[in-house]
Image 1 (cartoon, rainbow, N blue to C red):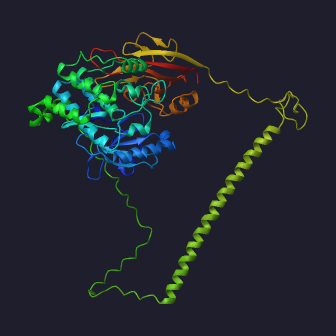
Image 2: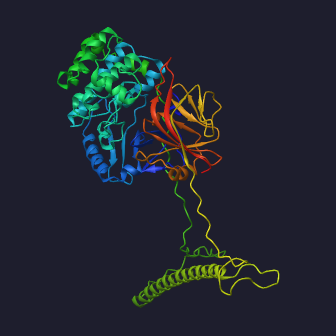
Image 3: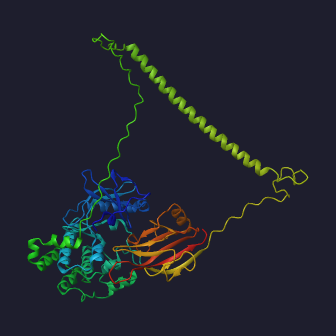
Length: 548
């Protein structure tokens, strides 16, 4: 994680160079609410700029929620939160800026090094619980606390995206369509679309701590409904956790919200278990080992240099140099203008301006008449072509009645038959992992790696990869994927790799094959957690339009 290329991505053609005066240095990632970029304050401090997706920005209800949550987030101050420093809820599009935390997320750190040792888990719980105290104190419920929303700096964890998840309402929902959050880290009341309180965040903290200690979600992976069923109807299996962590995590995971520990009680319990290390300030040494080398942040983007152009106002001619022997030469003084001369000069200036405006107006009118006249001539030629008879017969005379439109044989012209759109070919629940591939052409489901679309995984993330086809992810409401939309959006795409980190169940991905075939992938199950010994795979419903 010490290389900027592992964390930051170069800006793409569709990324803005600046947002509200913040010049963008790199792309950090994308999520359900929008894209995240790296920028810097005027003083050079790095910040994360989150730009809201255009389709969300057009929703008045979203803007109201976003404005309310931003105002609440401004009040949050604490050592373990990424402070909101700037935002514009009424911008086009809306955006917000938080201090950038140079460190991996908890999910990335666990994927890289495996489960955390017990002291690190206790320091983690204490820091996140203190962050929740500050967040709850500002009247905010996080609602989506999870490992990817906990960043690990060299001096401790930072909780991000507090309160903003309510504004977006775009996180993974249950079958009811009303529960907001990430299934593996929901509370039972959240999974059932019940009342979400500060105790729901405590339940998520317990699940996040268990993930740090186990290296995988406490309630397992799989289809969302299966995970939520286990959260609601079964007791958590704490036997796999280190014995010293079980009582504290159990207090966080109580089924009844009233029985759960408060953030203040969690902080006190962690300090008690850390003992002398808590009083001696042993946390930084733990975090340096867990977070790894410090991330190298790209330098600020310099302001564009001003382009100096030559002035259009003529400069006065330089005085002639004195003749030899006349060293007492001085420029002749300019006599002041009389009031009458000043009035004449003002009249000349006004007449010049009027002449320029009049000439410009005449030029524009002339151009307009020229364009209209050319358009009329084109329409006239087209009309004449429609009225003209067909080709002359061998005898040299046109066939058919004079003035009638038709072919050389007198047969009336017929308008061309509209082309029929290609039929969709559905392929439900297509599984894709590192051992197989998907073909746009038949056979679509392949057991080898010779297909057009493959999954390739590195140390921290997995990507969709194709040598020939291009990808575009739809940032639109579910169900927006269609032949028309995918054909339009992929026409100019040059993206042969699509990171799966920004996807979730329900994400729609458009694919264009060089042959003209268009495909739509709708992710149904995503099991990409980068855990040692466990395979990574996705399952998607696939629709292909041939020769589109």
